[in-house]
Image 1 (tube, rainbow, N blue to C red):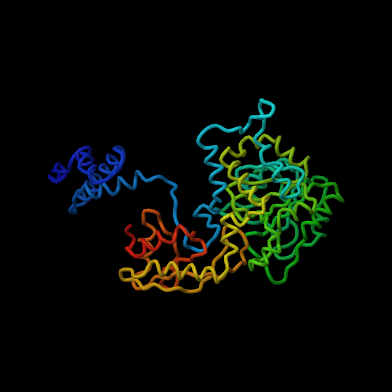
Image 2: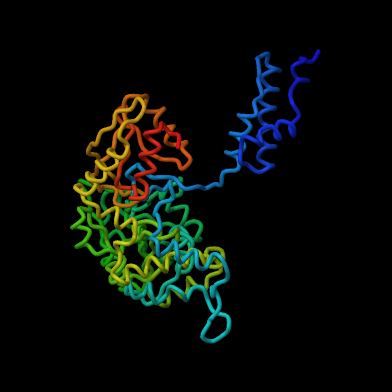
Length: 453
């Protein structure tokens, strides 16, 4: 005999109507939430447990279902290029440029001067060439795509020689050998994990060789008993043997080494100096150290860029108008000497003294919080995003103790605009390096009110 409690469960639409007064949510969300609430209660009853259906839970779930995703979060981890949090925050100029073309039409593939069809690949060519010294340039949708396209354009059905110490995994279990396979090239490994010499490349070259590949180890470091061949040496060998060369820089640093040293960063090869080595193709990301939207960039010799541009894969990998607009505005900041307006650059350049002052300001804004002790403590930030793995950036954080750290972290993470910090030594750490000035008052309000705003 069926449990009589099942017949007492409300109808979906009746429960949705009851919850409507409690939540500013669309009808579909209220109905779906009511259906789930009733379904959960039905399962409990069938399992012999007590069950209660409430309009309040339906209203809460409906609001969550209707919330847009992805959504903005506040990064208090201290990881500047946090891949899980979307990597580089965009400069105001980039956001404005994207907004300008997003709300209407744009001359994406239209030549305004000639009044006829143009090419999306022309928009950033001159700007990229001016910044990097390359003969030509194209943009695709990420650096893995740039690698696939470049390798396919130069070495389809040919051997690609690369050092064993550079067979990187780029994240999400994607590995360089798999990218080479996608481009229909044949991988030829030379050297060992910790030592590769020029002679290793020379001995591997044969009739089937199509490309010499050099990969910058941007997401890990090999230290100790090591040896590697420089980009210039690989290029010189390729030119002597009549072979094209390609260099994967990964992160795409445009700021010169003098500034990198001034900021206390380990020196990262710049795109311009890598292009100057004479490589046929140089690939790098737009959304890492460059600080723009997700994109992959190929710069280099005109003939190699033309081969990539004309390859059938280009159609599948080409960027849209939003990417081009955001990247163009970001690159223009570098051209105009305004790199400090790029948020990633600004975060990396912040001094420990400045960060301590920010942390003390945040602690002052928080004041007292229920059951929480607030302190300012030194910590270490990281670059993240597979860039500068050895960089240790002195920073300061506001730490929260007194209540279970996992409970406090959850309250922050489930705030209307989630605040993502980290837990260490039983405390919640809010590293201020990755907080903007506009974030401070909000973070303080959430913390002082126990996650409720």
